[in-house]
Image (tube, rainbow, N blue to C red; front, side, top):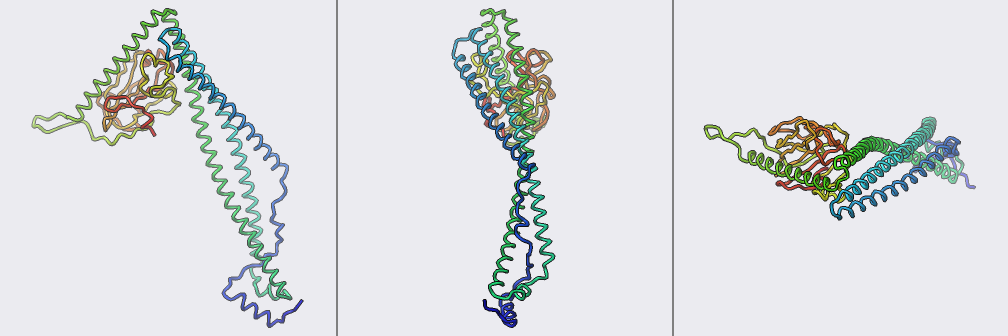
Length: 428
């Protein structure tokens, strides 16, 4: 091996170091920063995550089966809706609907169980990320400590302690590997931080979904209780008499027609008043109404949708079309104005007679809130979007519930130029 003189070494230093920033010589072996073998605790953690994954998959299979059952009941109801109206067929529909709701309750409970496993898995992932980050911090600290100790060691020193160009080149290659190792470790650290923040965000979202599911479960259970009570009351009132049942159908249809006519009349009357305000004695136009912004509704309350617009499985569809959406919420839930507007109707007398509120909005729209158990507004009053206007009801036999209700919920409708339209097309 050819040796180089001291003068040659200094010449090489000048060539290699011109304009190059001083870097440290990293003498700590690479293996000092390598990942350690998995500890028994880590193995147990990985087994726990694997076990949770298995349980999550198991619950997913159960959910698919329950959804198939729900669809089966819906198909049965749709078929029976094609039959002639009779007490027997109506009881069959109500029975299928109750079975459907029982299955929905099981589905929601299963979803909550699955969420529990998913939350547990996410928490384990967070712990794992935090441990890896702590480990990376220790490794990075070791690198930085080595840099600090060797910060005075320059290319000059590296060159002088080596007897040949090949030794010098090997030393530089070693230093480059150290730098790559450090950069790789730093990149891993940043990735772990990003994944940790994502896991924490996922956990917050899972907890929020869990909260909503628990609320949905309560509402669904109340709906089932109401449906069972309604069916029992129906059988008591008509005494399994087909003639009495047909008379009940006729009465309920007439009641629905009267309500629709009332809504049409009063809505049109208020809209006309907004468009054509009164005048003072001097001929000056006056109006208690303020300008309304473009119709942009929010949800008046939150809960599972139990009946959609023109729902083919609506228990009373053969009696009249369902021209709104039903939102299952516990009795007495606060109801908010979906948008700013004026109160056209605030019908509530404290009896079990059907009670509702109708608000008139901009652009020819109106919103209806049915089965309310308390009313906080008056006709022609201006209300702001999000303002509490009533409390929900609809538990059979309670104030404001009306005759055709099978459990606590809000009957929420949207009307455009007097015609019912699907609320889900407008809600966010």
